[in-house]
Length: 124
Image (cartoon, rainbow, N blue to C red):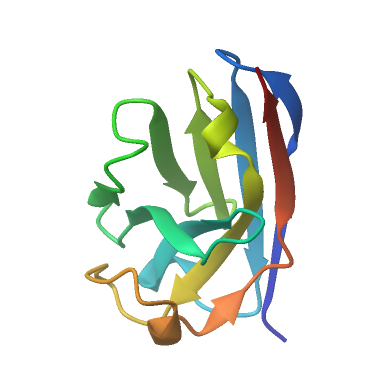
């Protein structure tokens, strides 16, 4: 049974940092593209950061230079280090897995597995 379990969300003031984690189980984690999405109230879900099986990364323009995605294949865990947080980063953050070893799309329909989400709230 595939499971993705996010953790690390919380409330922080603008300019602060948080580190999200996503623990994966039930599939060959290291072969999958792993991506962080987020969804703010009243908005569509959007891709934030992705990492492929060779640690190649891509970022949404709104987070580039502030967020860093990484993965530990030995621990089957995905991370998102978020620095210089802004109120507009407030959202539910989800991790997702796509069963290809490359990441080439933010289209959520391409992703096979999803976590339940962890809330990030940034106050001004």
